Image (cartoon, rainbow, N blue to C red; front, side):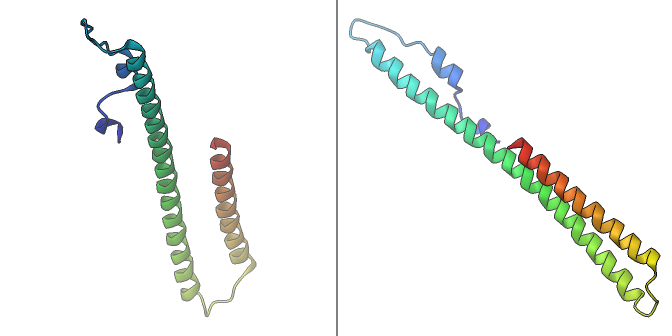
Length: 117
């Protein structure tokens, strides 16, 4: 995403050659300056990659939360429609099963995120 806005890569800066004339630049100073630029660029790329990863994680979490919200709304509608109907053991087991799926899915997602860090 941000890499397109940076014109030079660390490799391009490293491979840059300067013309030398009788009053040319001091090569040691130029090399030190280029080393500084390369270090900065490496930091930029690292920051950008970390931000892109964080963005992807947040988008995935957002999708999961939206799905949970939809499921909760559907469950609420079912409960409202069945208020007068007696709750059976099958209904309780079905709800328990759905809750277990949500809990285990969130634990798995959390463990995957922790293992990636």
